[in-house]
Image 1 (cartoon, rainbow, N blue to C red):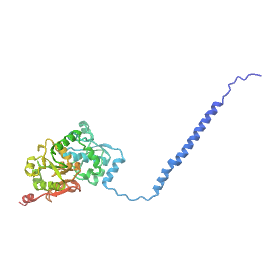
Image 2: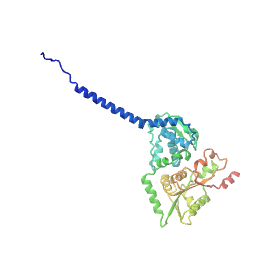
Image 3: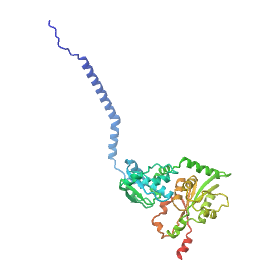
Image 4: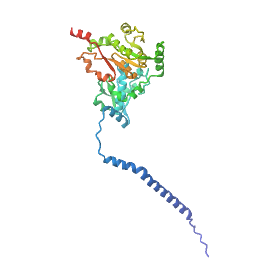
Length: 360
């Protein structure tokens, strides 16, 4: 018999490979079936049921819209705000930029001069724009008045520079916790303020600290001569302090001012419960601000400095109300209801000196 020298095929490896492929195919189909029936199909059925439901009308306030829009899309572009005024103005501009940029879906950046002032006492987190970048951006200036308006929900532009002196809780109160976090004091500032307050307690027990800010300076002349208004007088401060004296066992009033000599002459300290802090100058507003903000309650007079103290403290706040004549041009720029929180306590100003001057 002649030998067959042709190569023989070994079918065993081929059959084993087919068995393996068939095995994984069956396993995967089984997994897909069970996964589809237990995981995928339920949301699909639910979405179909939801689609058949008649949608109910939804009513949203601008504060709710602000929160919703901020999470619906990634932030783009570059928004900033002018850096004008003193500490209270800068804080208002920062908070307004933070809120409106979020609301409109854009990144917020601050000017170097704002960063230089606010970062001295706060752990602010918005980045500062480098001067070279600032010059290269095709900014669109957008003017703001001092309260939130519906048109601010939809400001157009990727590169917007907000302008004006915005300082109203109506811009940012819906994200209050975030704003308070932005204005977190540096640890050394907290320690300085708390140490100062601890040192002035003396032998008093159960002390309630009431921060008192008396704004004078240029306002002494500007308010009556330009704005047809007045600033806080001796009577207002007496009423405000007596409110806390009647309510709390041991109030201790911590007074800061840019007119400390006037304060010492006009604030009654016969009970020994008033401490005049600072040097009465405007060279260190951050230190005075931090000291007041570490108190339990606030008495303010006028100005954004006092407004921000009350906002950060969060206790009871007494403010001077109705301090302008009805025809004051100041009221075209300023709204009492947009400046002071509803729960704050207003004491009307004595307009009689202004009325006498006006009648003459």
